[in-house]
Image 1 (spheres, rainbow, N blue to C red):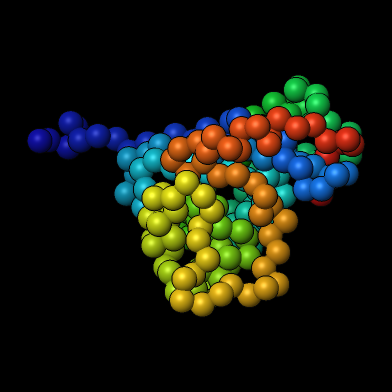
Image 2: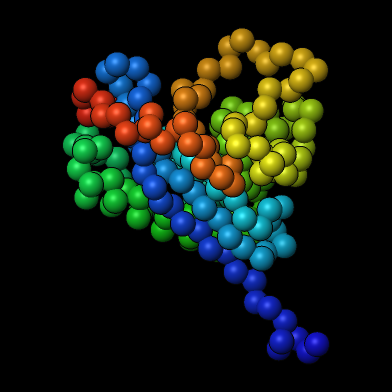
Length: 201
């Protein structure tokens, strides 16, 4: 087969399905599904699906920027104290902004070399666990984390041979992840409305 017939690499990313998540009686937040479909050799999995909230995107951008100081990263949608989870226009504008951010990031070869980005879009590991993984402080590698998560319908499991530290307190621990399938018992819990507007950092 000649080179001109070789398939061109592509990365398709969709940010979709915003859901209201309740932290407690007073506080809630919106998270979004990140769907990846690609044939790029840079990715361990060619299809993946995870859920992330806005402040996790903020963390990702900060980490990518600190590791690629010569690159001007695209902006995230601006934070606003008037963001209203019950306002579908507000939610969709943020969703679209997050999607545009990831689309630009995933087209940059330098940023694609950062393992944090791959763990962010292809596992449900918390930012703290992502840092531990890329630093070599976990029993699983980056590739193992991505592969094992794809086989699950829930968050990445606690390591079986030793208990996780009790101080692990990911504020998004109640967020559902779809893995590669939707969990039916999540669908009802996400329909609840919070008594007040969600608290977004």
